[in-house]
Length: 417
Image (cartoon, rainbow, N blue to C red):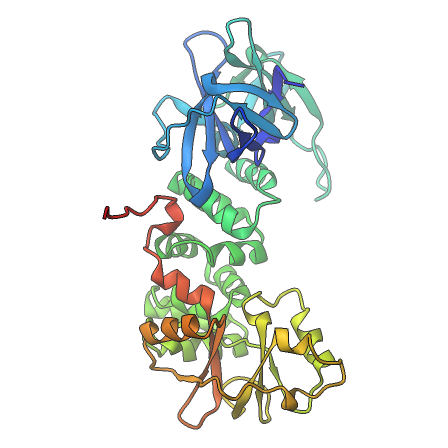
C-alpha cells in the first residue's frame, strides 16, 4: 500500500525501483526547500545508483512510497547530484537541529520529520518528532519525546552540533564502513569532520581506511594526539602508515610515541618504503603458522572476526618465530586447499612452494601482473634473507590502480571504437 505520510529517517537505505520493478538504487537522503510562508516542501530524493553515483530524483517522479521501497516513473537524470542553495538535506543537515517550542515549554532536538502528500500532489513537512534535553546526569538517560507541527516550533539560529552529529550517526548506524565513508564525503566539510569526531574509535578507524587521502588528513588534524593514536592503533598498519606519511614529521613522531609499541614499530617499518612498491603497499598482519600446525588450527585463525577477507584466503608458513620480519618464509597454504583435507592434516604437507614471494622494492606494476596471472588475492613479501615481512593484498593494489576520485561515483569515459 502506498503511503501519504512518511518519516524521512525511515527512508534511508530504502530501495528505489522503476515501474516494472527493477531496482535502480537506494535512498540516501531527502531534500526540502524552505518557503516564505508555511512548512518546507520536499523537492526530491538523493539516490545512490550502481557505482556509487549519486543523483537527484525530483519528488514529481516518485509515484508511490511503500514500506521499504520507493517507486519512480523510471525517468532519472544521471547527472551527478549538486545541492542548490535553497535546498536542505534532512538526514545530513536537519536531524539533531535544535528548535524552540512556541508554547513556551523550552527547547528540543529534531530526531525525525514527516512529509505528507497534499491534494496538489506536493510533499510538505507536516510533523516533527522531537526529543527534549535529558533531565538526569546519568549517561543512560534520554529526554522525553513529543510530536509537533512545523508551525508550533521555531528553529534556533545555531543547533547543538554534538547532538546533531550523534543523531546523524544513529541514522548511519547500520551502514558498512565503505558506505559510511561515501555518505561522509557527501557532507559539507565542517559537517563531515563534526560527524567523524563523534564516531567511536573503532568505527572511525574503519571509515578512515575507506576515505581519500585529503579527507583522512583533514579529520586526523582535528583530533588531539591521544585520540589520533588510539584510532591509528585500530587501523590496518599499511593504511595507518600511508596516512601518517602525509602528516608533519613532528606530529607523526608524537603520535607514534603514544601508540602501542608493536603497532608503532610496524608503521615505522612501512613508512621507510616507497609508496608504489610491495613494501609501501603491504600489511604486516598476515596469518602465520608453523609447518606442523594442523588445518583445524589454521581454520580457527581464519575464522577470527577481525581478519580481513583478503587475508583469510591464505595462511603463510614460516620457521619460528611466527611473526613478520623474523620467521623465514617456507610457503603458503590456500584456504580452498585446506577445505579438501581433514582437520588433523599438517600444513607442511599442503604447502604451495611454487608461488614466488616478492621483494619489498618490487614495483606495483609487477605486483598486479602477478596477482592477475595467478588469480591471487595475496602475495608474500620477503627481505634479502627470505624472512616474511608482509603481504600485499589485492584490495590495496586496487586502491592505487583506480583513479583518485573513484569514490565520487563518476563513471570513467570510454573511448569510442
